Image (cartoon, rainbow, N blue to C red; front, side, top):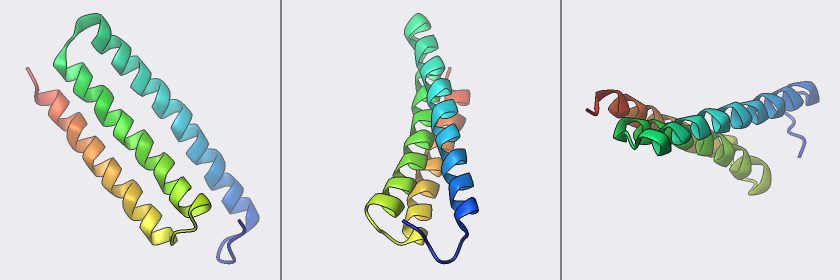
Length: 97
């Protein structure tokens, strides 16, 4: 879908960056979850969930905007909420004993 407010180059760059965020974020989530499975440390479990929420938010923002044809602002809001909850979960993971 081509949007008239941004050039094709910017759209491609955003898609590439979002894809890299999904890949790297997925790897970080996997590593945190693997550490949790080895140690069963609750804080590592919360850390994995927090990073997972951030990655899901990035994915949902793109899906809602590109595939479901929802307004860009709604996609950004969805992503921001997932990032907020993900960061809150990561912060909580640093406080769990």
